[in-house]
Length: 164
Image (cartoon, rainbow, N blue to C red; front, top):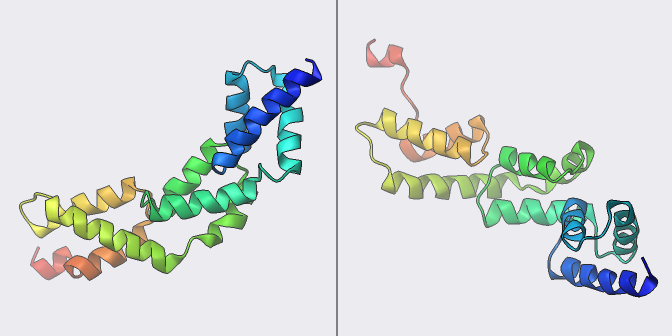
């Protein structure tokens, strides 16, 4: 590869990374689409990292923030999606503390209230189970879900309290 093509492709990658936060896997996928051989990806990634256009810690923080507040995801789904992007567990754990527990509970509470309005069910037990499964599918933790459901619907009665 000549240096002219390298500089031209590097410019494309700089624009690509400048638009929004990207992870290394995103950059590799884009380089592959540009038909740049795999053995040359390292050069591009190093240059982008040295110019601070590519930074996985910054990507993790932005991803966690956006997926919590915009997409209304829980911690489990966020971690799963970061792992799909080949972000190391060490990096995930060092950045997951940016997830604000109070904001997360507020997001979950709003999400459950909105879902409760459109959920059909015969009794509160059925509605509660549907809301619980819905929140699990969004990646929230079981303890968080139960806490919010208790605040929204009241504590769940045990079978022994129902006379069974």
